[in-house]
Image (cartoon, rainbow, N blue to C red; front, side, top):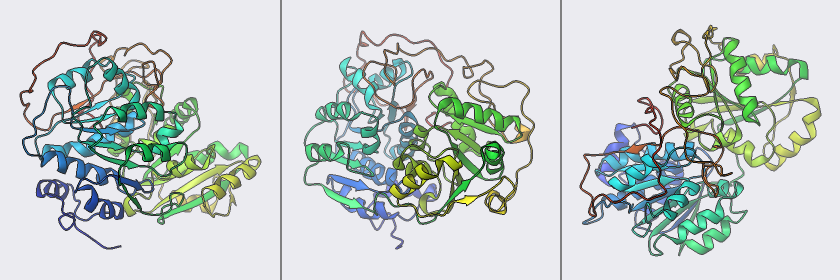
Length: 493
């Protein structure tokens, strides 16, 4: 792999300086391939595996083009950049990448997603933002309420378009894209072109350039795969053993209930763990991700949808507690480790009766691995676990959204004191009329019943909006006060 610097690729100096401050000096392959085109305004279709560096591949040209625009002025309710993402976690983490780059030009970013009160999001739009990172459902709600317009959007990004298709969001995405100017730059990123993604490409990209780092079904070369076959009576102990190492690891379950239960069991057994799924409030999700991402808690137990939203470096092990239902879920789950050139291991825990389904799954994922019959004390298991972390006594009083350890156990999460709510007593969001992001149409994944608070990124001192404060849309009802996420939480100010 060649080591091309961002300066050599033509990235503007303010962005190069910001990247260097974060220890980023050379570009990954997908960045090397796309930046020469995207920096000049070309439409691009990027295909790269999870962990390939695609977020910066679109963040850099978006910030560069908007920041270098002559005479650009921030206006209320009229963003100039739009990023669409399938999940709240992914939207939050994309915003975390964009924010420091935007700060180099004094630009503001904000996130828009469902499951929470929309008041803060509407207030941010009224105050003027340059870039909106949004899930499609809530964004459509606000567009319908005329809380914003997309007629000034110059750069549009659609991230993980294949996952949008899997979740049934493409009709909403299509309606949103039709509201953006046809002459604007568009960048789509998708692992595959099935399930309608190809139609989206034909309809909205013009004279696009395709950049594909590698085959979309291929796995990261630094990733080692294992399949452990275990008797049902030993499975629980094996999973605990796999979770007991000193490094960060993610355990994936099929259901929210399983994730919550397993995190609680591990914590009670002296292995600090937090859970991530759609039954948590937004503050709980943010706090749990912060505890895991900052290293205080080593184990995250998550549902499938979290595989699209967790972007934490240094995850050494991914465990499929049960084989996933389909091969694309396997690849996206597994992509949480071996990111950005780092090495990592993936373990699938398989019961004897799951052999045939697991073999079919791995064949479709193009993974070649020989299953091993193991017990919790097998050498293969011990070698993978490595050094076992010190036992941590659980807290006497469990907290909402999964138990978390006391500080002496390494847990840094001080989420609220009440059950089922995060600290500060977050209130209820808008009525949930059967939609996954708290509205009526469907918009961001795995968020039914969630409560919490969105975030606005202010990258510089506020500038006066060109059109001034506007009256609030009638449908934007005042939500209850909610506590802010703690410093360091993904998506917090």
